[in-house]
Length: 363
Image (cartoon, rainbow, N blue to C red; front, side, top):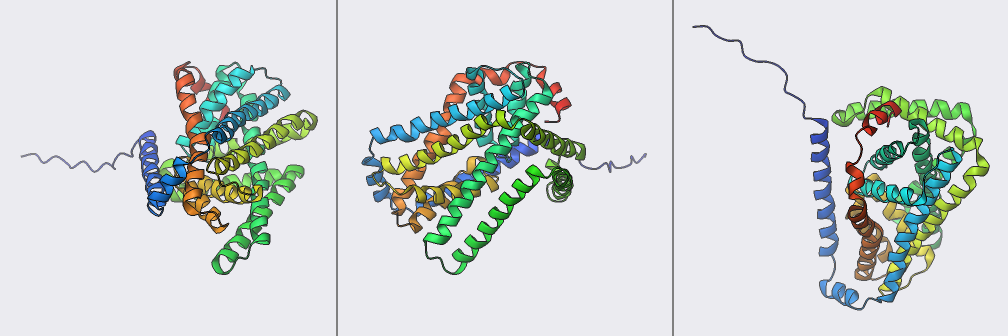
């Protein structure tokens, strides 16, 4: 009898797409669980009373503000594209903005998923791959820098205007110090070319080491990370070389964030419990930061819980805060997602040549 050797080949690694889907599914389960936990800590009767006495006309503020936010976002992209010598109609840019942000909410990857979708549609719209990279990356960078300054403002107010003790005081001081140092680093890197290039290269190496060590299944190849940091540096060089052309897009981005704060403020007006705008900045800063650092799609449950906790600490009834934050969630996240799917679903299946162009661009 002939004995066949046993097959000792290593097990097949799961396909990256399948493993990503598995990760997103688990992250979504965590988000739903967190949201259920927030609701379970609420008094159901008070939640219903708050929801049943909503000011219907005041709901126009958050829902109208959400639409305005996407308009300003699209205008910032269009302004950067114009500065780069690329032409695209406002309507096309608005559609791309809706779809790309919808992908970002579903797959939370620090903005990279939406970046890839924007790259796809920019290239399909006859924008050169290099220019498409600059437009998308530069808008994302400026958006995050502006957000960082709002976060610093919120935590500064929280530390200066309210008596904090124990762990809350220590955590606020540490976070504020981290955000201030990060903001100063951004400014320094923006104007110091040699230091910026060295820092971006070091950051790329550290990112590759971290991903290879802790999430090897999702780690991109080192050459892709190098290409990403090179493209980011090119985008910053582009912005510095066209300062006058960038004034308009930066202003649109600032207005976009202000309108986003107005959405949250309007949600409290709708629940008949208006709060100072300074409170809005504090709650928004905490909720957005925690939702961005989590892997949960759109920060589901994480944002609601953290915002409600902060507003409760600022003397807002918990149930009132929960309903207001849910209005913010529906208006700023859910309504654009539904709009994107309803109007622009065909955009995601058109064209077949963009994936190869994306590979060449290093998206």
